[in-house]
Length: 192
View 1 (tube, rainbow, N blue to C red):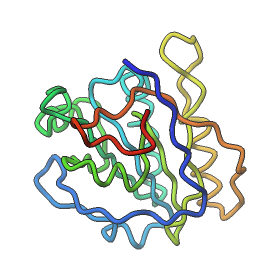
View 2 (cartoon, helix red, strand yellow):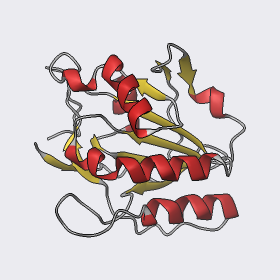
View 3 (cartoon, rainbow, N blue to C red):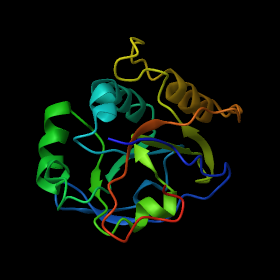
View 4 (cartoon, rainbow, N blue to C red):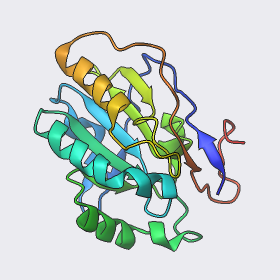
C-alpha cells in the first residue's frame, strides 16, 4: 500500500465530462446532474483501508446531502484485473452492503480519473452549480489508526458552504489514501 495525497486540482477547474456504467447496468453522465446545486465526485474503491475506514460515514453523509439536493457520484478506476475486489460485481456488492445511495461507476479506461487528476482513494471533488471546482481535499482528519473520529467535518463544511452560497476557504488539506491502481503503462504524468 502506497500512501498517496490528492493532486489538489486547481480551484475553479470545470468538472470533466464522463459517461460510465454503474453497478445497476445504466450509463451515467455528468449531464445527468445538471440541475443539482452542487456535485460531489468521489474516487473510491472497495479494498483500500482508507476507504474502508470512512465508508459508513460516507454513506451517511451521502444520504444527508442527497436529501438536501447535492448530486453525488462514486467512481472506481482501479485495475480490476489485478485487484478483483474492485471489479464491477464486487462494487455492486459493496454498494448494497454499505448502503451507498449514489451511483457507483466503473472507469475501466481510467481516462475519467486522469481528467479529474484523481490520485488516491478516497479523493473528493466538490463542484458548485456552474460545475466549477470549489473544494478538493480530505473528508476529515481521521485516518486508520490515528484515533480521530470519522466525522466528515471538512467535506461537510464545503458542501454546507456551497449550498448556502458562501465562500469556501482556499486553504484545503489534501485527501490521503491508497494510490489509484493504474493499469500497466497507463499511469498519468502526475503519478509517482
